[in-house]
Image: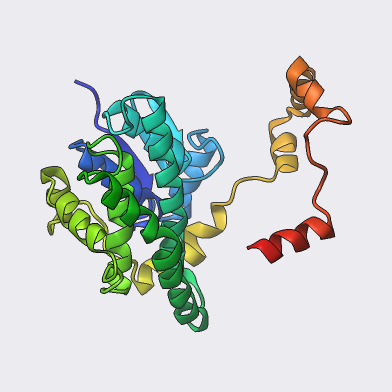
Length: 281
């Protein structure tokens, strides 16, 4: 019997919560090893268990997976929550990427300075109601199905429901102008595996409290950023191999062609480009 997935992360939501949601939606039991001290994190880092020195990390199928989106993709594909063909996977990926942009704002909100939290709350609500939720309201209205893609549960549904419920904790009436999303949220919440995850006593984590915020901000968080490339090269004594690697890749014919003058490769950003983008956005 295959070992259950093991999740390595502090005992809170953060970027691991989407992984918990997805495993629960797939009906997969999992174990967790909570990082409570810097020493635990250093042990993972020193043991070469964290590819980029960061968590989340999930042990599954003999691998130690890092980077949240890669973890989500692997689990979704393994448990048939990633569409039936390339077109469906691409739609799912687009919907997930957009939703995660909004979810990231929700995740980071408790870590903002108190004076910035109310301003960011207003910004989040505006983005949800103007940029994100109208997209999904139209999708559901136009195709008349219960799920976002392929009329079956997918990663896109799981992440969207997670985001909706997390935002409703802060803004209870956020869906008031979106009747299709209201109905959708109720339907997805009542899928048996998801319904169990939403019940008390599950491994779903509560909103971050002050203790968690302080612990992550001033305890583990200071050790989480990935190493600068120069430090990585020095520490691993691989600068010669690294340079040889970049030379080999740069000389692949299609890549070498893209680096030559006159190709469609763009130059570094200048002031004109920055001004243009600001004016558009």
